[in-house]
Figure 1: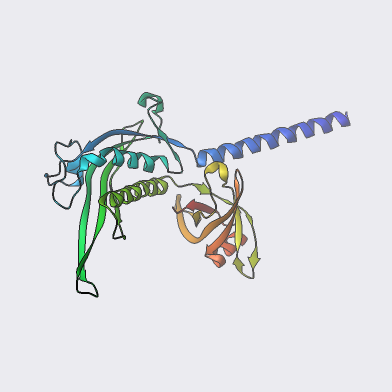
Figure 2: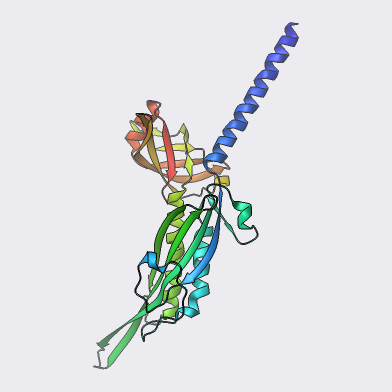
Length: 297
């Protein structure tokens, strides 16, 4: 009987441990759940219409940019669209739907549809002249590329508009042998980055500190967090540390420090260097205060 009871206790402990492990995994996956994002309509604003960002919605291009210092917009329309797609695709917590899934298949709360209006594509030239040592006139032409788009992000399930936000990419060439094309390409890359940065702030990756690492006197030098390769973490990623308190039934967060991932050590574990707030983070850990770690980029 004693052996049977011991077996039942051991079995119960195994079930409990498995349940706790599954629950922890589910919680972590839910915390950093991946969402679908789809590019809907892409339209182009007419160059000779004066309009605000809001007025640009629904407009379709019937002309192109003109002027001696501007390249033709039509040459880069597909490139701007691809830059927008790259920006949507690069966010931590979004998977870009490239058309393999119908909108009806991704109607879940949190999934997004993005409609885009491209409001500006141009490269402005700037020519500088000077006299060389022999008195001859020399000149160099530099270019500034600009690519601007307004995105309307909507919840795929409810149709609710999350935001109407303008994004601008600008690139300036520095070589006297540069071209307007190079300036535009640089601007497109920066446009992609701006879109990705916005999405990463809208849906950041979250983690918790699972173990305190090295300490020097009253300063926390490193910590370990439950975020790793399977979540998209990488060496050099910057994260903020927030102290969480409940005030009058509402959750309040205040940033007390920053971290930098020094080594991703597994699918869900990374070692981080504390880059600011060493004393505050150590004091919070010692006091058992609830801390949340959130990506800053």
